[in-house]
Every structure is written in structure tokens, then in C-alpha cells.
Length: 420
Image 1 (cartoon, rainbow, N blue to C red):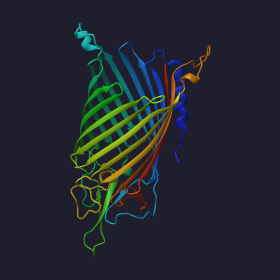
Image 2: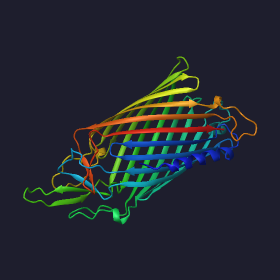
Image 3: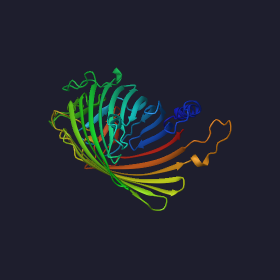
Image 4: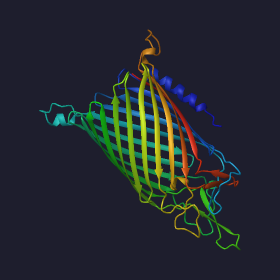
């Protein structure tokens, strides 16, 4: 089980900031979120995030976030359904590690068009944001930056947006965890570096006073070391009389280009206290020949003055990468047993409750916390995966992980946001 003492520390840190950081702008806030993830591979992740946003003048705001993950993974033994021809061996049978990530954003918002055209009467502000992220784990580090621009048009009835981002990632495994080279394996690791470029554009249109639609296109280019350094694969010799098994490191193509298109529609229904329905569709295709479709539905309903209920459903289906096989024969050019690169579908159901607490709190003279808008939410999601057949991964103790058919995960999340 995970030890969650860092959760209390993050909460104390949040409360101490409430008293002194903010000066009274209604756009300023501080938020804390906790999320717990668990699946039937005995993987558990506890995530704590503290976010602070502060105005710096009438057109500029600055925000920052600190995230810490606690990750635990334990092995199982004697699970049936393993592929007899391809097994993956990891050099660490259990994982207990932390991930730390800091991020910061500087945002600018002003009606630049009006300043350039003095006869313009409509209010169509321009938004510009610069974001930087740095994350580190015991065996991995990541740096990322992005620039996003949005422009309102036609008196805020239309919004167009653009984003460009680049990230640099590197595996840094300790030497004792790197598997020995296979007898005929590839030069699998190198410096462990990868680079990702991301470009996206969006268009949002207010169709009626109760309906909004948006469309997004995205292009992503990954290159460098895209495999995982911890996994080697055991392939028996093709000769029945030869019992020698050869070991090969996972080897994925050094480049991956992908495109994605999505459509989103929001519809408000003027029933008692109000409700809205959010519908999403996303299409994805990449140079590894993976094609996927995603459909998501969300409903928000205010069933009481201070309570909102948010049921959710998500369906996902994808095809397999061109090099993915349930059973490999001989020595393939590319090799993996990662079920996320195979063909599968998932169904996810979720429920979220939002509590708006601001009217429950009354100002008290000289109190540490006076009246301010506070919202609290709690959510739970359950995901079920299905695929064509069982494929298992086994650890250094030769126990089997069921990772494809029958895979399930569950996560819960809670958070509190205080605006000043």
C-alpha cells in the first residue's frame, strides 16, 4: 500500500497560503487536488497538485503548479493466459518511486484589435500564454514549453486558437536496472532522449444562446528513443530440438507522426436549476498505423442550489500498430508486447459531484478565513478494457501480469478551489 503522508503536507501547505498570498482580485485562486489510481496489475498512483493563480495588473496573470506522484507497482504470480511465444521481462519486480513536476504560465489578455482600430466598438480580446513544465523521476526527466494564442471575433461569438509546444524527455535508469544485452539484440538504449513537437489549431462558434460548438486539429511529431529501457523479450528458437531462448530488447520505430481531429458540442437545457450536455468525438491516426475513435458524453445537472452532479461515459476503440503481434517468429525489425499498441476497446463510466460552499461560510471579524467563493468536488471513474486475446508480461521472478483482456482500472479524485 502507498503511504500518503505527503497528502497531509500538501494540504497544510495549501491552507497556509490562503492567508497570505492573495490580495483580493476575483480572478485569483488557489486550488488543491488529490487523485488516486489503481488497476488490476497492482499499480497504484497517488497524485497531489497545488495550483496558484495571481493577477499582475489588469491584463496579465501568473499561475504556477506543483505536482507530486507516489507510484507503487507489485508483481503477481501464476496468472494463466500468458503468450507462450513472447514474454516480456522487467528487471525490477516492484516499483516505489516519486515524480515531481513544477509548471508556470504567464498569460496576457487585451483587446489588441481595438487598440489598432480606434473606430472598433466590439470587445474581442486577444489571449497569449507562455507555459513551462519541468518534471523529474528517479529514472526520467522531462522539460516542455508551449505558446498559445486565442483571438475572439464578431463580439466574442467566434474564437480561433493556435498552440505550439515542444518537449524534451530522457530516460535515466540506474545501471542495475538496465537488462543485459540480448545475444542478437539491438543497440537499444543510446542516450535515452526523445523530442516531441505539437501543433494545434481550434475554432469555436456560438451557434445559439444555448449551443456552442468547437473543432480542433492537432499534429504531433515524436522522435528519438521511443522504447522502454526496462523490458526485454524472450523468443524461443524456431527449431523444436533447440531449447535455447533468445532475449531481445523492446525496439520501436524511432519516429512517430500523428494527427487528430475532434469536435465538441455543448448544449444548455433550461430545465429547473439548469442542465447541460457535452458531446465529444475524436479521430486519431499515426505513422504506426494506429487508428482510433473516441466518443464521450458528459451531463451537468444542478439538482440543488449548491450541488451539481456530473455523470460521464467514454467509449474508445483502436487498431493495432503495424508491427504488433501476439506471437513473434524469428527476429522482427520492431518488437513489443505492449498491449497499448495492440487492438482493443475500452468503456469508461464516471460520476462527479461538485459542491459550491461559498454561501455556507460567513465573514467573521479578524478571522483567518473570511468569506470567499469555495467549491469542492469529488469524482470516481471505472474503466474496462477488452482485446482479441490475452498477452501477459512477466517480471524478473517469472510471475505473470495479465495486461490485456480483462484489464480494469479505477480512480477517484477530490479537490478544493478557493477564489479571492
